[in-house]
Image (cartoon, rainbow, N blue to C red):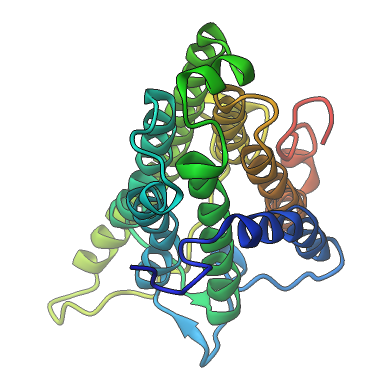
Length: 291
């Protein structure tokens, strides 16, 4: 039974229509960040009646991605007359779920604190997840290669395995650099607790401002957003494993770059304003030697 007839899961015609506009529309949308400075999330969050608490917003805007993929991969094959999916389809679907089990669920729960997220940012992220997951899951379920013979013509087994290796390299790097940022917050949290203890018997917290620090571990030595780059590496590996002709995987990577590159470049400007040009100018924003 379809949740939305013809769209969830999509028919082939609607899949092709969605994929066409997904490859064109989101890069345009992401590029607007070069000319719009406002971004109501993270460091740049501002007080607003339209803010959603950070953890709640993050979980509800990220989870629809892997939930959509699981739903489509469990309903569309039967509708399309596919009896059994090859192992490649299942492995790639599993990689997508693994990434988002971390990114959508574990990531917000592990964070010592999270800034509020504006409902406008939440809406864009929610839309990204649903459109992206519909394109990828439809390709994996019915509209991409669904037989061993079809896979042999789009991606060799060595390329598939190498792509998965690159995916896990990026995932590990992503977690490592996220953990470095979390550790900075944990240290600050402990500092605030010590200040509270010194505040007196009333237990009231002393006024402690939000704390920011320049991370130095791993690739943070050379750039400010290695966790962004690591995610690009993940999805490059996914694209390689799916075969270079997989338009949804390519669109996912391209759309992530268009979405995250402006934030990294603008984020470097933020760091320079806060810490001074001398401390930041030698670090790249996200691509060593380029940007």
